[in-house]
Image (cartoon, rainbow, N blue to C red; front, side, top):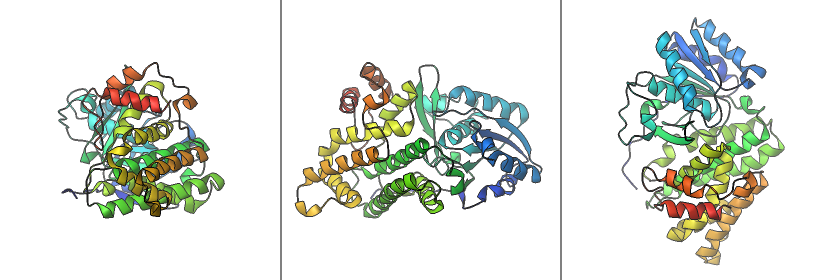
Length: 388
């Protein structure tokens, strides 16, 4: 196990009608807020009115910036920075899923940054300025951004999708009401589940030894998200099922399950090129890339893949055939994706091989990708081919 420092100050407010507390929580930080959200769904289902009412009850001045898209865009981040600077806004409230929260974090990092905020996503030297505090009302369990220190933004020019992170990007509070997810379209629910499972697997496939506690925590969370993925397709308005999925999403990406280990994150980097260029759902890209990555790297540590098969998927370990078990675990993962309606091949999302070299070259612009196995552009092209 590696040395580590774990710090997560985000206050989690979980449960029915938790969104009614947003005014009192925001008031602790500011009397002026930028309300940041996506489209019309928060208005359609009444959440917007509840948020406005709660904020106004605390005499909080409200500025709004809507329009966040999946794979959130840098252009809207610039607009948010402008609004905050011109109106001396010092708190951002994100109401939505991971895209909205990531956009809010980017705005928060950019308001007092003296240069172009995009530098924080692409430069090797990341000299952050003061980051504005943010609060969150989560509506889509997926990205885990409500408890994480990271953000992913897409630059329209070149469709570059990049990551940056800083401890001060962790929200001051995150409000999680599973009832807010009842109205999610089925595809958004399963894309979110794919993202959550990917966050767990990125951490699980490590070369660090003697990490049994976090192995077990990861395995338990993976088993929980898999179980409830099947249940939510049958009972989408089941509060307890939605609650399990929502909490899995937060725990998967709040840093606790990183402790003492080094995750891989190669599949995420490889997928970012897909969703950056083709603007597909991140969860759909992950369900295509992850099995392909596994097939390419599993021989590096067959024991870990056999453990994944045994502990997560229940493959009998008495067979004493580790390679067979490893491949069965990958097959079970693909079957799970198929069962809940996720794609497992690029052809299913209408992506061909014509831009493989371009995507691979972009992927390694800052160096080799992944920690479980370090991948160069040729490796990445082979993984794309396995995903065809």
